[in-house]
Length: 163
Image 1 (cartoon, helix red, strand yellow):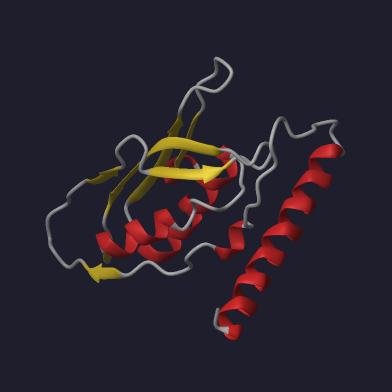
Image 2: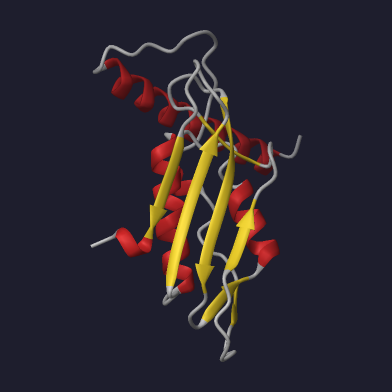
């Protein structure tokens, strides 16, 4: 194996190990111990930071809705290291910008190895999209996760309900 590649792999593993250990220490403060096998994951700050956008200068108002198919959106449960699958829906009325879909898809895929709660990942996506869209008339980000332990989790953030 190429020595440079080996160093990069080792650095990535170390980063994931440190984040996983930090998450486990955090959970232990609340008496939560991981169930089953512990898997490595990354912190939210390693997600893709940019989403390409396209100018939108049309006089018409249109409502844009992006919705992932089941199994397409996932992050990692920071308590178990297991994948959390959900359906992500983004709805907005564009201001000056619309999202470029290929770039948005890569952004979403970047969460697949990130350990983050369902509530936090929804907030992160909302904040990132608001930053990239700059001035939508409104923005809604909603995640509906697969049932876990008999509970379905739905998290919804609507810009019209924010201070």
